[in-house]
Image (tube, rainbow, N blue to C red; front, side):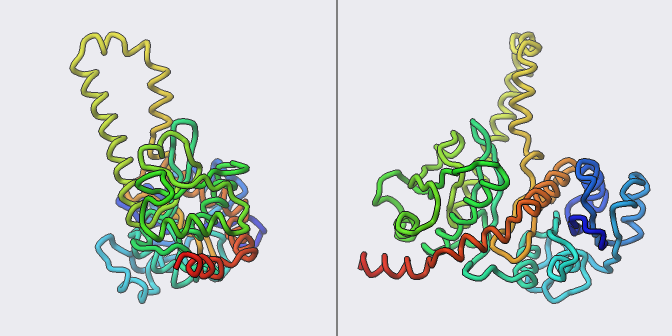
Length: 350
């Protein structure tokens, strides 16, 4: 594929219903991005069987056979040594410069481990992070880290703020994103030492960011911040709490409608409002968590996503490649020295 088009690498064998769902999503993404080409890795017999349903894909995809598959129960320490899996080869295509990004719905730990090993961390970034785009009352926001690093120091959190700021600008089109650290209170002295240290680092640095301080979990869905920064443990718990609450509300609304004659009678009058809310809350439209901080773009689709959800993950990868996301993060970090700022603050405090 040397025709100058943007190229995305796809692991066709990752996810609960691969390769069927992956190819369905690929067909949707290709339809909306006719200038993009795809490298598709997987079991050729199975993949070609799905391609028969979407003949147009043959013009924009190059199929490459991979003899083995990464399973959900596989440990990252095992899969990083196996170069024959569709996941490994799809990521390796980015390392080789054959593709600009990789998308997989496979094992999260394995995808993170192989991506970090092959693509390497951007110079000056100590740890990559998992970031996702989510809905709030007035639009969308990004949250990171969502599980890559259970424990983080102040430098890590400040780096996450830089990466989240760039992502919000490029993926959401927000010119001056509001950045906040997730904390248990808004007061200056609340929270762990790492969070307070990170807050002072961000305020002291020359980073061009609109840092608004701390945000409490109950404020996140109401648009107080465009970028919410946390360590991986806290971020993952917050994410799953938000997802669980959303599912609870949907199920309670369904139960209320089914159990009430008046609610059923009034449902037609609420159709358009309900449809708008349903679209806003549709998790398929927010699929695709990104591993940021690497010398290449790696996007993780939810393993249970359908074709639409997988196409959204591919779309996120395409958007960030077109915005030159990785290079922008690298340029932002070249202008600052977070380690030096951290040491200065540490001596000041202690």
